[in-house]
Image 1: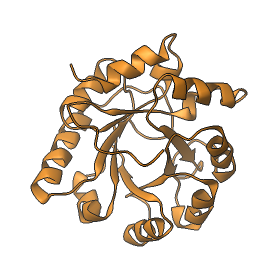
Image 2: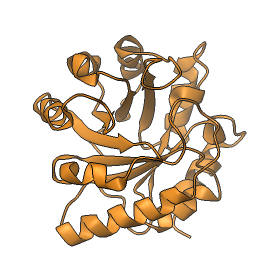
Image 3: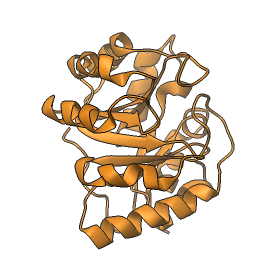
Length: 226
């Protein structure tokens, strides 16, 4: 499957986060999410340093790649992503999203990602000024707005994310740019449509989708315009 086109028509792409998957039966969960209508899969990569949690790395991403043709967005919540970009590219992910708060050269890492054929994403914590990502908007394919503090699933949505999505959407239009706007954290039946209505193109949801008895219905609710 190719990378995502703008969804348009007031709709959004749905990206289940595998942070909430059953890693003892990942094959079943991935297949079920694809059958239920997932547009892409969100892979939360944490190093225990940039965020206070530790998840998985390129080896598991490679295993997931063998399980599905869905696009894979690796969200690198790690301190030194520049050391691992090539590893994630070899693992078969489609996009790598890094944080603007890292100490490394963000622009250089984005350029390296693009040279490797990866879609380039940039993300920021809820407390980071939106101004921090403005210098990179013309060289990214995706901006990920965190609506919770990154590190753990199942947190409560920060409503301040709505204003940030609105501002990014307006800036995108004013500057004639085409990056996608993604939002991650506390996305559910109330917060997902609210984000979609102010310009979010991708809704990332973990526990609300994977813990549901009807994953297809939950994803349809997030995707479809009212």
